[in-house]
Image (cartoon, rainbow, N blue to C red; front, side):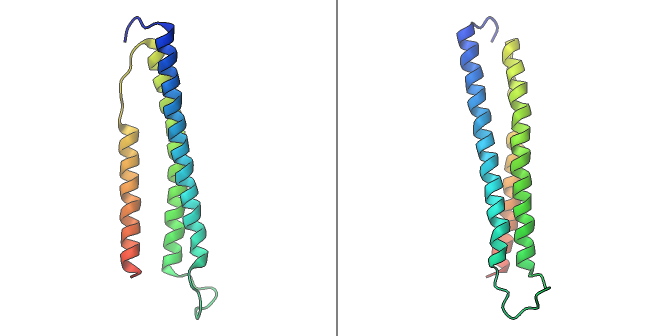
Length: 124
C-alpha cells in the first residue's frame, strides 16, 4: 500500500470509520439485549415463595444480562482502539489485519450461548 494518493487514503479512512460505527452499533445492541435480559428477571413467577428468596433462574438471568452489558461495553471500547490503530496504519501506508477482536467476540458469543442453552434445558 505504498504511494497511495489522497483519494485512496480518504476512501480507506471512511471505510475504517464505517467499520468502527458498525462495531459500536453492535456493542449498543448487545448492551440493550443484556438490559432486557436483566429486566426480564422481574417477570419470573414468585407466587408461593417467600419475598426474600431468590429464584435461581432470576439470579442466572441477572448474571447473563450483566455479562452482556459488560461485553457490549468492552466491544465498543476495543473497537475504538482498533479504529485508531487502523487509522495509524493507513496513514503510514501499511495495513496488517488482526482478527483478535473477532476471536474475542466469537468466544464471548459461544460462552453466552452455552450458558443460555444450559439455562433453557434446566427450566424445561
